[in-house]
Image 1: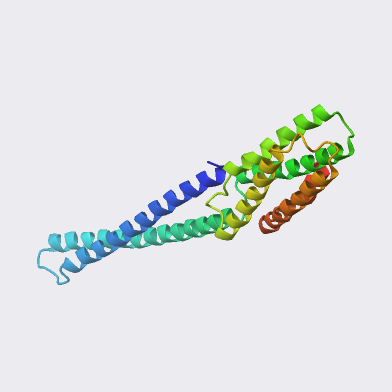
Image 2 (image 1 turned 180 degrees about the horizontal axis):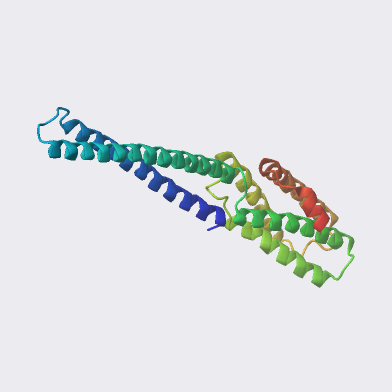
Length: 222
């Protein structure tokens, strides 16, 4: 699990504890108030008994005030934690998890590297055996995206967008894996796959736009 996942779990646990605490002090408040009502208001001839009742009343009043104060403290803490967890949940739903982020970054470079190798193969700009090996590796890597699935902490729309992108990369890799020996000098085949790459990049752009991924940072690094 990521750091955010742990923060979310701990935050939920603390908010539950704070909520239970506020409930406990609220119960204590009503309990002390009930005890106060049971104490007699009239004065007795026995002064010692009167002093004892007065001390008891004073003690219960202090406990009642303390219970109210602690109830509000716990209630505020509960509200803050609940608000924080709600925001964190929203933040997670609108941002890529660490695993999905790594997959998107890897997919970005796989598509560009595959495109570069296809052009080289089409133009016969390098050794055929070397190019076949490179294309086979890239095709296998892209086909592995069939095992990837968007994290369910993402919003439903975000999951659909990301899974559509993963599927496009997977399909491209699976198709390419059966053609790795046919790309060399084959302009028609290469152009067909270059068009498929452009289609996958449309889904990639949708993913980048939805999750606000900074593509320019990738281009600079590349």
